[in-house]
Length: 402
Image 1 (cartoon, one colour):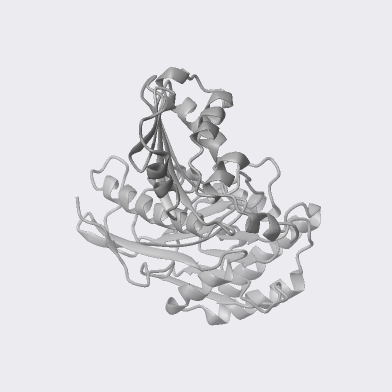
Image 2 (cartoon, rainbow, N blue to C red):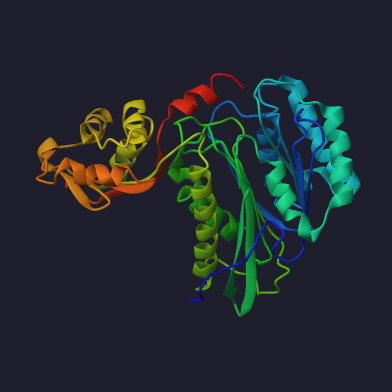
């Protein structure tokens, strides 16, 4: 298998045939960038995943309809306003965003997806947005991917973008992406937007399969605060300009494409966790030896949602008793006397009780800004991993208002 090659300063415009723009349109009163546009120069096969929240923002509802058409040429994005819980007017505003983008780029509205992020329940300032779209259309360029990544940030402290290349069917293909997210992050899905581009030619059903698998193992494996959102969207456009023969799921090289896509999304997912709102520690949590994969997932997500556990991480306190407690009420099958717990490979619990390891040695691990926790239940082959972080006093203060 060809080795993946990370592209220096890679962005959503690194693949052939993609342009982007990012501007300050005036949605955010602080003058920061708040609108972005990503465009393929030719027809691109599209795939997408969306929030599983029953309350979906207007842009999500509209994009779910447009993606059914298969061909996506552009994605219009804004930050500073979620256009969620805005009723029929919100739907009309989302449609206006796709229609105005399509008009200026000589496309069909159904070839345009729309993504919004920001405060819920506030009407979209559509006149401001319309003027912003006109500015974006004039600024589209291959070297504007970085500005686009900045424009979708909300509570993010840095833009999240990357690109990777790999050889498929004898041709070098590139996959680029940008994402945003720092709070309201939890699987299925997190509060995040991501736009992914590739110049590979991939059979549409294989493209959808690859994206669904990659999202499940990346953006659906992170948790900042246990909350999921109304606006989560991941869009993938494949325009085929790399010149490779059409890649199908049955071809051996499909594995290369899947590996590259997964590596890219995992990189962005880790950026989101590392940029979690006011965090001080990142924990790679793994539950293994569970009676089933579902049980392993139950325990991991229960731990990720526990304020007690996350507060102890903030204090650098291993407090493995809280982990045992959460595992016990998670609903997963568990036998206390079989549980082992490790911090960066240092055993803190053996057979459900404290191991002989000095507590000071375990504390040296949990004092670090990043460490691993493995909980082995010794009940089966169920395995699940989740990237999580701590809960700080600053997070509470930060989220007292919006």
